[in-house]
Length: 97
Image (cartoon, rainbow, N blue to C red; front, side):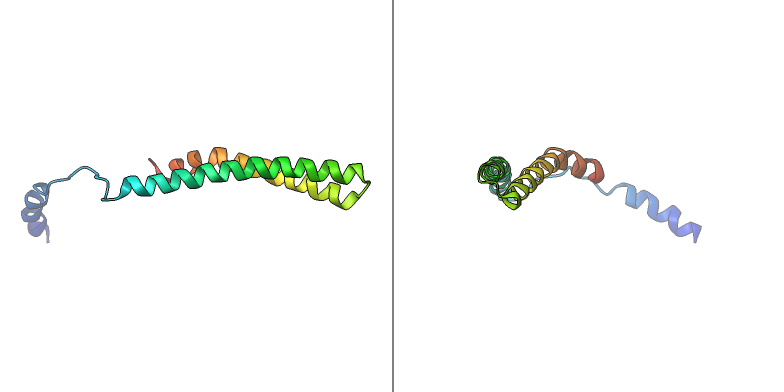
């Protein structure tokens, strides 16, 4: 068994190791991902400010349930913003890039 490894190792050592290369159309895919990321950021901002409006409107007309819904909307937007901010770092850390 050891004789096969002694024969195969010099052959396997000659196999080239090419560097990574982007596939065709990678720029278009990155453009779509960038647009989705931008849209997610805008949606988080809109969700937060709509939550502020719902909360303020609920407080103004003394509707406690609307006030609670507005608070939940704001907290969801804040949580989403935190995940939006740390998501890239978590993914690259776990991927080992």
